[in-house]
Amino acid sequence: MGQRVRRLDQLLGSLGYCSRKEAQGLCDEGRVTLDGQPLDDASRRVTPGLVRLDDVPLDFPDGLLVMVHKPVGLVCSHDSSEGPRVYDLLPPRWLHREPKVTTVGRLDKDTSGLLLVTDQGALVQRFTSPRHHVDKTYLATLDAEPAAALIAAFAAGIDLKEGDAVERTLPATLKLLGDRRAEVTVREGRYHQVRRMFAAHGLHVVSLARTRFGDFELGDLSPGAWRALPLTPQ
Ligand code: URA
Image 1 (cartoon, rainbow, N blue to C red):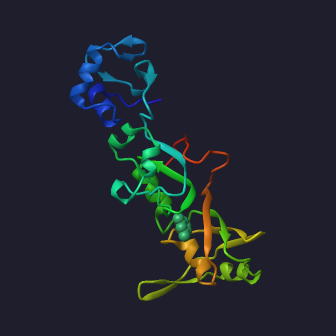
Image 2: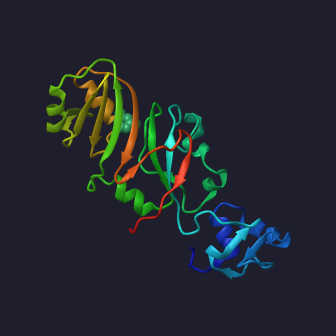
Image 3: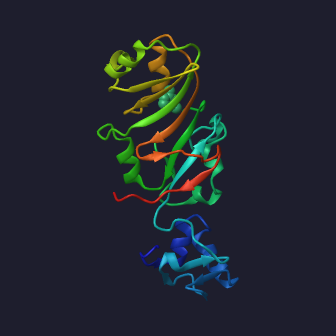
C-alpha cells in the first residue's frame, strides 16, 4: 500500500490520471474518496493506498513493474514514428506518469516474448548494467538444423563485430530441441545478440521469443497481455 503521504493533486498528476489543476474538478464531481470518504480538497495530503477514483484504487502508487508479452511487430521505443509501440498495449495514462515508464532493455521489432516495463530507474539500471549479468533465455527457430558442435561454441563465447573491434560474448548456454529449434541463454544484452551469434555460424534466426529474464518467466501470459510483478527490494 502507498504509505508516503502526498498532496492529492500531485499524486493524481504523477500517476497520469489528470493534470494537477484537473484534480480539484474530480474532487468537485465527487469521484475521489479517501478511506471510503469523499474528498473535496485536492490539496489535502493523503496516503496513496487509501485513495480511490471512481471507486477504483490507484494504479501502482508506490512504483510500477509489469511483465508484458511483446508480440512480433511492436517496437520498444517511445517514438510512435518507428511503428506500433509496446506502450500502446498499456493503459494510456501510464505514459503520463512521473517518473517516466520505460522498458527494461529492448527486444527487436521481430522478437516476441518477455519484456519488463517499469518506472523504477534503479531497477532498469540494475537489470541492464553490464556489471550485473542477468540471464535471458530465448527460444529460436532456425533456417537449418544446428550442429551439436554449436553447443561448445556458444559455451566458449562467440566473436561478434562491435564497430571496428571484435568482442567475444560471455559464455552462453545452448540446448538443441530438434525441428530446427534451440533454447539459448545469454548473460548480456548486446544489439541483435542472439541473431548475430547464430549468424556467426551461418544460421538465420527465423523466429525469436524471450521466455525468461532473470528470475521472471513468461509462463502462459498471452501475446499482448501484461501482468503486475511485485517490486523487488532495490
Ligand atoms: N537477441 C536478438 O537478436 N534480438 C533480441 O530482440 C534480443 C536478443
